[in-house]
Image 1 (cartoon, helix red, strand yellow):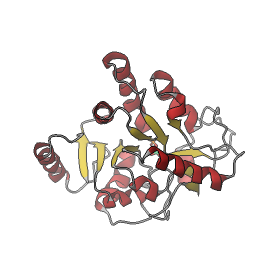
Image 2: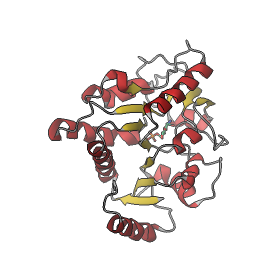
Image 3: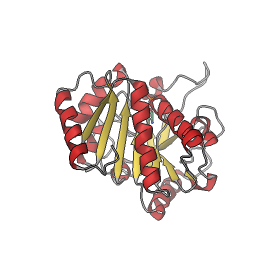
Image 4: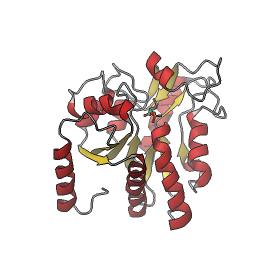
Length: 264
Ligand code: GLP
């Protein structure tokens, strides 16, 4: 794993967008895994700017979102579907037919919906670059503690903490969803490259456990230790309790020197 420590959220967002843009320029039909959550917003803004000012072209990019709440119609302002259009898809040129977001509306048969999602990823040839956020309990996607490290896309029950953390934006008196469809850890680990973003002191513990703690289903981001090409891109606050910060910096510089073709 590589750990890139940015000075602040602005640098983290620019760096994340640069990685994604470079991947698209190198492979215009990139299969790109996307995440929602406030941490990703700066990266999306920067990608939108690059689309407008630097002709970054998304016309052949195929996207797969990590997760979606169960029980919210896509049009609900707090659905991840709405989040993605508001923050990204409405401002760039990914054709609608190339956008995949799990369907969390109560209509479908979830088992089938999840199997179809996995099948769509497979048919597209797998995910080339998966971007991730991290929950305060160390989850990726909505893979809450005790998720199987081999899990595939499925419905997960959310912890009380996650429900509370994600409450902002729901009207007072409105019950936030208590379950979500999420890619599994096994699904995420099949992506060819992984870029996890973590920002702010509230994520420091989760980041330290994921990078330096034991591999455990209790902190599902620690499963990235099994991946051959995963990078944690974190700001100083989120990196605050990492023990080997200086080493990560040296290792990153060395990796860049020895493998100039890398995305970062
Ligand atoms: C949700 C999402 C995660 C995301 C997390 C953190 O739980 N399912 O994918 O990483 O929120 O969100 P934020 O970036 O807002 O802290």
